[in-house]
Image (cartoon, rainbow, N blue to C red; front, side, top):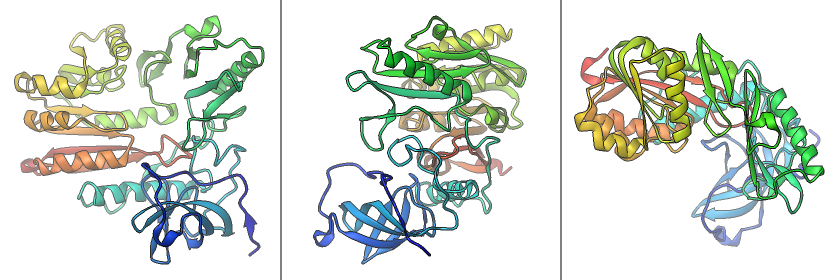
Length: 420
């Protein structure tokens, strides 16, 4: 097969800490490798000359020439230099910024290969980090849209170089982006107008970051540049109306949002439910329709305010929302809380704080639903929960983030002694 030269699409600088010379003084040396599979974090795994080689932007089955950048013992981090023989799973990335922009790292994989890699990432994390045997068959529910799905964006602004876009991979330099193929159409339109303001020197010079979010009413932007940017947004979802603004977290792939919410809730109902990291109330509202008493906890003040407003708009008076960091609040109150029939947690990528997990084990909810956007921290917390007397009763995964290695997972747990 004809060799294809890899140009201007270098691999990510995987790992952290200070770079060290590779074994045998091989830092900067070229290696020829065959990628075996994709690991958590989205990097390809290969072996060569007694080394474990991690390379970004790879596809399983690729034969590559890579260049060693740094090492940790016998593990080296390498940048892709040339595709010697492409994998059948490899496709040509459509984005001209791919490899330089830090936003997407799976555009080189066909969509079926992306889903398979994400299932393997979940399986690998459960085994290695969680010490839990994963289900025999992990199916990642595909996104209805592989492109133009992202309803939220965070754009970096460099007023000196007059650039606007995302950070370059592994750096805090701005990659100037005119067109983003994963941005929802109205989000892309807002980026285009924002770039017009940049050319006209009409952007606030002290604004180094803009956050945009799409709702049913348009796109909100923070900080606002045009008058309509400051409007709050809303989204109708399964009969519920959710208000939010650009500063509050709301899931980015709206096409999968209702299936994700339904999976998180399952068939739960009863007397008392606790919703941790509740955000603007995505799960809180439907929980309040199923349980007699619901308490949400959210550390972001604006999001907690929206959760209370969304409950009020829905006429749901049986739910309250605490504005507090979840870990410290739960640790301080666990001893005095009513034992919940159902506890749902949807933490950020870092997972639940250790004190939150300890408090959950102290509370002993009959059922737990863990919604996670990071398989590694999910597996870490599942290890603590399963070691504390719970077992996994179901696992579902959703491709909320096509063209990236990220995946959303919903795990339901029950107390082991119930064995149901």
